[in-house]
Structures are given as C-alpha cells and as structure tokens.
Length: 304
Image (cartoon, rainbow, N blue to C red):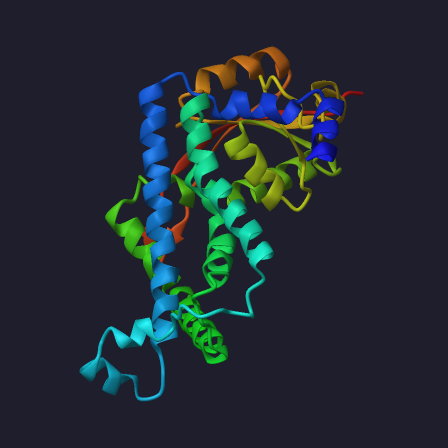
C-alpha cells in the first residue's frame, strides 16, 4: 500500500475528493438501505455460481442412481476430513483474509462514512469467492468437475447471449420509459460528432456535461472527445475549462436530469456564444420503442 499512499499524496488526494463529491450521502437511512441492497444483491448473485459449482461437483457417472439411493451422497462425497496436500495452508489463509476484507469492508465502510454503495462494487467477490472455496482443505475437487463447470458456464453464456435481444424487447414493452440505461447515447455521440465536423472540419476535442452523459459520449464518438464535468471540485486531468474554450466544445444537458438548472446556468456563463440545438434520440428493440431522450446542446466554436 505504500506506493499507493505516496501517489495519493502526490496528487493531493484527488481520488478521495472525487469519491466524497460523487458518492457522499447526507442521509444515514439512505446509506443503510443501500448497504442492505448491496449485501442482498451480491449474495443473490453469488448463490447462482456456487449452486452451479455444487451441481458440477455432484455430477458423476450414473449420478441418477446415487440420487435415487442416497441423494446427500452426491454432495458429501466431495468432502473429506483427511489431509489435503494439494492446498497450501499459508496461501489459502491469505486468500481467506482478502476475501473477508473485500466482503465485509465495503459495506462497513459505507455505513461508517455514509457512502452511496453501488452494487457493482462487489464484482471482486466473483473472482475471489470461487478461489476461497477451492482453497478449503476438506474439499476434494476432481479434474472433471472443472470441465463440468466450464461446460455449464459456456451453455448458460450462449443461452443468455441468444436471448438478450428478446430480453431487451420484453423489457421495453413492459416499461418503455423506465429503462434509462437503454437511452440512445451512442446515436447522440455520432450525431454530435457529425455536427462538429460539418461546422469546423476538425476533430471534436471536448464534451462538457455530467458524468452520466459525458463519458458515454467520449466512448461512443469516433473522435473520443475529452470529458469535462462542469462544477466538479476535483479534476480528472484529461482537460480543463481553459483548454475547452481554446479548442471549442459541445455542452450537453439532459432535460430529464434534476440537475438541468445547474447545467443550464453553467452553459449560460461559459457558452454564451454557442450555437444551441435541441436533439431527441430514441432506440427501438424489435419494433418496441425505447425511452425518448431530449438533449439541450451547446456548440462552442474554437477560439480564434
């Protein structure tokens, strides 16, 4: 951790400033609710691969015969109290300590510091939990079990991949305006890139907007403009307001965002000479319309 702490000091603890600005909460009750949701969400997701792993361990030749005679034997035969030379006890202890810290640390930190807990912060559990379980000395993992687990994973992955268009279409049909994650941000990025190139015949350098819209535009636009977040108390280091005004930028405000007045006020102060556009984007999923998003766009030309 020492190199990381030295780096934090060198950058004046900007990552912590960012975390406090973006994820800090003022409501203890909301923090508790989010922590409980985090724990329940990750336990439910972990239960699926653990159950499938148990199924792979129980998968043996003529397993149906054992199931009919001794159902519990399918699952108990993989466990033994004898010594297991395949497990390095010191390395296994390191794995278990890291697993406990990663599993317990974030929710405890969320409660203590009143942090907005995101469920995807538990992603590391999906890499560590299988390793922590395999490191249990009393578990006997047969080589064929690994093949079965890989086969199950492959079948499920292909099935979900094949069903994904239908899943999206069904969700749009049931809730056409509630799935903001299906907003047409890629279409907006391409349209704004074309608008910039048509007007100035140069690469689009900077996009100004909230993190939720600026970063997707940076990703989807062929020009990959550097994102600038108005009003941020931390700096990503990718660009600055001075550079944005020198190179020109496109400002974007989401009309459905409750921060719209703040965005409009910033644009009025920093994009007074901008060309203003109103753009609406919408995607369709197997004929079902997705949410329609309206954007207020400000095109600021490069300084002369």
